[in-house]
Each structure stands twice: as C-alpha cells, then as structure tokens.
Length: 431
Image (cartoon, rainbow, N blue to C red; front, side, top):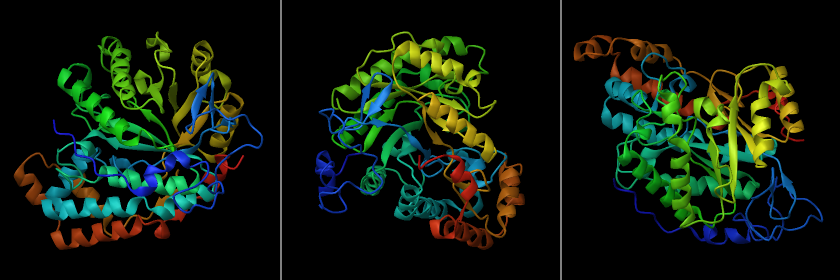
C-alpha cells in the first residue's frame, strides 16, 4: 500500500489556528460570515470545537448544534444519485460501465470534470446563505492510495481538493466532518461502501492496516485545521443481513480504538466520531464508551414517525454515555416529516446533516436535470454486460454518449441546478 505524498499546505492553512481572529478570505478581524459565535460565553481554551458532556462547544464556549447536509456523490459516487440502476450502483461499477460505454481515457476525463464541477465555491456560499453550519464529506479510501479511482492513480489530488473545500468552508464559517464512507475491503458489504459484496475489512488484517495508515495520514495533514469538526472513522459498518453479523460486530470497537490511537499520535485536537453497525442503528455493541476524551457517536434514520420512541435507542445511549450524538444521515421523506423530525432532534439535542445535497431528481437541496438522452446511458447500465458480446451488442454510439456526458457535467454546476425551497425550509437551518 502506497499512501500518497502530501504536498505543502497553502499559506492560509498554516494560520487557521488564528481563525477566531482572521479568515483565509481576508484579515479583517471580523468573524467569518455565518459563524454561530455567542456573546460573552466562556472560552474553552481551544481553537477547535470540543466535547463537553453531551454538548459540542465552540472556541468561545458557546454550545454548537450541528445543522447541515452531506456532500454525497462528489468523491464517493452512488448510482441512484445519478439516476442509474442495474449493476452501476457503486463507484467502481459506475466507472466500469462508463469505461465500457466511452472508453478508459474519456472516462478518466469525465471523472476529473465531474470532481471539478459537482461541488464548487458557489455551492458552499449557497449553503452558508441558507444556514448550514456543518458539512459531512463522504470519502473513498482509494482517493488516498495509488489505486485507480475517478481518473487518478499515483499523485492524485485528494488533499488539494479537501484543502480547497476547507478554505471555502472557513471563509463561510462552516465546519467539515470527514467521513470514511468506503474503507479498504469494505466495511458494509453493499454499494454504499463501494465494496465487493462483503465487509472484508473485519476479516483481513491487511485492509485494517491500510485503513489505520490512511486515517493517520489524514489526521497528520489536518491536525491544526480548526474548521475540521471531526473524523468519522467508518460509515454504516456491517450490514444486518449477514448471518454472522454479530461476530463481525465484535471486531468494530477494537478497530475503532486502534484507528483512534494512530490518530492521537499526530492529532490531539479533533473529535473522533463513531458510527454503529447495522446502518448506524445498533449501539448495543459498544461498551468502552469513553476510551478517548474527544468522542462523539453518530446515528442514522430514514424511516418511522418523528416521535421520541422512534429515536429512543439513540437518546438512551447518549444519556447513558454522557457523550454527544448527532444524526449523520436522515432524509428522503416529505417536507412536513422532515420539519417535524428536525424539531424532535432539536428538543433532544441531536444535531443533523441531511442526505443528500445534490442529485438527479428531488428530495435534496438542489436538483440536477437529467441530460437529454440520459435514458440511453441508463439502458446500457441496465443491460446484460456480463460478456464482451453483451457489451458490444448493447453499447450506443460513443460520440452521442460523450455528448450526453458533457451535458451532465454542465447540468451539475450549481448555476444550472434547481433549488428546492420547500425541502430547505423543512430543515430549520436558520434557527
């Protein structure tokens, strides 16, 4: 495993410890726009968001309540967010479909343009204006290795991209959570972790070693960055349909401890965020709740009524541990449901980042328009491509497919997306 060599931080990154006085967008001595800083609160003595019992505290000493969204699909693509089905439902399977559709070099070009345009400064400024104070960034481990991923291999640009995003977030007073959505070997065994159909991470020591090394590298790079809220070590580990999931569950907390120990060798500043197995629902597997002084837990919920009973397990675990809990994923429901759920979460002191920010279709902040002819791409994705003859016989013309992909790249730009006002209003972001 070859971890990518980090480049030197830009000058503004080196002074982020002074971000309570200055921002990278200008040394005016004023608070960055959108930052929720209290008046007269007792400072924490830290330039970072920190843990105080069941609360998060700003450097000013004021309580910080997470309200935001997930920058999903940008660096860890999922088929349904691109309105693709069939076998093209994870990052590597979408990539394979595109390579069969238009060829490898054109696919590499597509991914580079996709990354350049899916999330830009315009998106971050828009989110800040609407009241977002936190963004969760799903990541794929391959971004930090020499594996072929989204048009890059050795010498990829992931740190440059996160650093650029962090500069935008700092200027807007937004905090960033780094979420390992897809880990080496796969931690879930589903399309969401871009895996090969099983959570091999918990069986393969080599995969665990790689994950620990990647997290230590990330923490070393961002140890002094004050607008990183925390590191979410794994997204939704161990799906519930494996008969042996209880055995795999037992491996989770020891792995979390090992990763955290490696992070603490280089970074004692940032919160470590722990998700539960079985879709971030099953907190019964944890016993050593406070093995580190800067821990927060994260739950997910997409169904049920917006009632206390529906989140009782989360609240009880939070109260038992005396540590913060936040809802890392919630969404895909009617606006009235979302507003009631947000009220409930506010009452129970559980912050939230909704899923997703942007996709083809509704139920998101901004909608991407499907390009004309997108159905031909979807049809190819859904076709039987299990043989070379199947690929050849179902593949549409390359030039027409390239035109469709070019239009998709244009459509994902913020200026060309449709803002869903009702959805945004339901999230109570400006409270």
